[in-house]
Length: 451
Image (tube, rainbow, N blue to C red; front, side, top):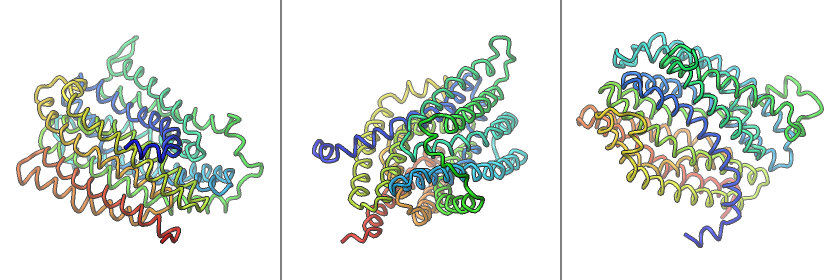
């Protein structure tokens, strides 16, 4: 191991320099959902289950749009590698148009789901709360996608700390507003679950204003503003590139997130206690995943720069470095999940049934840590070299044709309940990790015609 880190010391240093702010920024975004979950969890397991159910549906829909926008950082990093960094601003402006179109479409989809929430066959005790929360949070979709567009632009340029500062500030605002609006402090009415939704909406609007203003007025980023305005044709062509690369990425994200989100919906078919325990275990696993996601973004940027330079050696070394880092990190988090599972669960709920179920699920969450890290990083590397269509198909097969059906069978036919769900999507995750890692090394050689 020490030999490996000495060999790739330069790439590891670069990856960590890029990834650390991205990790903190993504962790801050994830902690907003965690804050909602933890702070409403004290109101009872039905309220917690309603929050988990609504958030599953929200992310199930919005990750499709978010994945499309991830193509922006890929395009910008390639332009940087080609020595045309100023063209990245065109990707940013086109991304703004794309994000507005996506936000309108996704908002309409979620409103349709909210109007027909009974289709999801959730426990009647949680439906009203989940629908009310979902409709409020749905209004935060436009600012959230604008924030992501800005972040993809700055990350692609290598300025990864900007999004970190904005997101951490938004997190603090969200927690404070949760305290005011959920429980009714300082003269505010106690709004319960709806208060958490309003806190999220207000925080995301504030973050979007700061992010767009930063790019518009801060000198470090103004240097990338071209002197001439882009023509309509240029914006349309770049929007087409974003969709060309981004739609497969969006479907990748959707296939993965939808698998986990739908498993949460299926957990609701069992009982509110199982749904709550499932949501807690998945939320904790999602927190550790933020580091893998940050390393994935760093690997995508590094691979994109090397791809723009047409340097196959740098592509391969970037892949080796980030895969090595993520394997070490995820092994450590797996151990932590086993050793500290009880205090981690107790931070969310004091319901005895929820804690008992959650203790078992945390063992499965620990198991899939390594696979989760490998598939995240390898998919990011593939994104950096613009290989997105075949990975999209592989992910759909692994999750939806293997993992989810297996989980359903084990949960409802074999009687394993939520344990069966976790065995199913853990299997899909391992298959995805193996396929995407193999695909990166195969495609990297083919792209540059290496022997």
